[in-house]
Amino acid sequence: MMTAPKSGPAIGPTQNLPVFQAEGFRVRQGANLGDPLSHADDLMLDDVYVLGADAVPQRLTLQATAAAHLNVAAHSDLGQTGAEVHLDCTITLMSPEGQITDAIVMVETDPDGDIAQVYLLPLARLSPRAPYALVGMDRSDAVTKFAQMTCARFTRGTHITLASGAQKPIEALAVGDRVLTRNDGAQPVRWVGQSTVRAVGDFAPICIRAGALNNDRDLIVSPDHRLFIYQRKDRLGAGRSELLVKARHLVNGESVIVQDGGFVDYFELLFDSHQIIYAEGIAAESMLINTRTKSSVPDDVSARLSTHSSAGLSGLDVTEALLDRPDAAELLRRASLR
Image 1 (cartoon, rainbow, N blue to C red):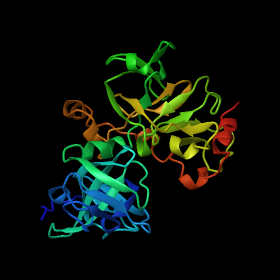
Image 2 (image 1 turned 180 degrees about the vertical axis):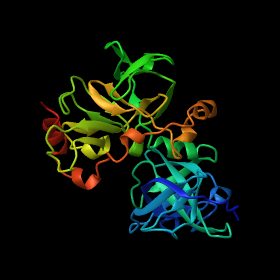
Image 3 (image 1 turned 135 degrees about the vertical axis):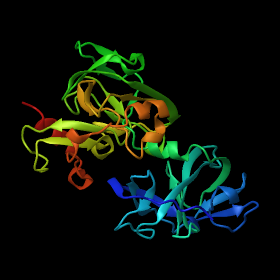
């Protein structure tokens, strides 16, 4: 039984997550033979799990609350509206070929705090009927992993435009360096974060090749990193000139591609407020501290930036439906030309 804290009012946008229900991911060999995926207390290392042939990811829609909890949002395909969802643990799975895959175990609780449902959020693709050995389990980093999925992150070598107009690789930036922002001029860097992760699934970076958005060099960012586009002509049909577009929604296999495999060094930049900066000549967002991403930032940093907001950028997000076309990147490139 889990304690059911008070959730508080819902805040921020909803989040759609493709998850598997626990019943579709069962132990085929090991101590828990025949059992479905469960929470951390019941997991046994070396158990071998198999994703059922008919198991398909379903949409779990979550809403963050003022108390930094996650609740099932209305219109979610799974779960009871209003129920709390806990990030129980991160598990590490290994395929017969030795490929490592991380996933987050999520637990939905009822009003009494009892477990109502267990979900699996893979951070890379799982193949049906393939055996996956449970080789690792961590109770401490699920919240951080979950936060990192939506952080605005640049890759090593990305050139950031300074207030002077000079270009500086992001890994060479330091706290106090003044960076050119679109709305507030020169702004000092308050924090630079860095982590190295496997470049698979939701952590595989997106490469926007030189010229795709009128950029001189390749820009490589995290999948949910939002790019700022100013349309001189509304070619996309968004009904406004200023847009925020997630990098993952521009993938077309040619000018915008997924760089899957190996490891990637990611960097985050924080300012006093959420900013649009310039990376390889493309206007792109800096990191935003919100209820989901806060756990990926040191406590002393997030405390100093407790009033962090993106008020000036709210309402600019473009829906995936508008971008679900192979020429989306080209339309935006042309729309931003003089």
